[in-house]
Image (cartoon, rainbow, N blue to C red; front, side, top):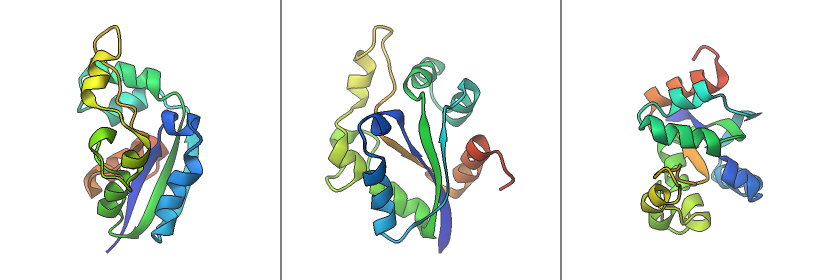
Length: 147
């Protein structure tokens, strides 16, 4: 099934020069980049995108995600396959060969104690929508067009 999904390349990946590597992982599997933009996220966008998290953590995410690359990737079974490519949320537990497994060792525990206020965002390089409903919501947040 041909699907679209939202991928966000986060600030830590951009700072580390991993943009090309991350994009090429999707392209090598035959996915197409349908839309791509560089953004400086607003606080409102981040609070809406991460509304399932504790507000303290979202505040730390606002400090962490100062610039991002947001893209729509499309192809067969894009949502599930792109989630597989990104790997588990915590880089330490992500499978080698995934983006997070190869380039991140961040953990929830580390994030929890790595900040004077007791929490920070997990620096895990990328975001990928987890289902079609969330993709539509996230598309609205980042691209603001009717989907």
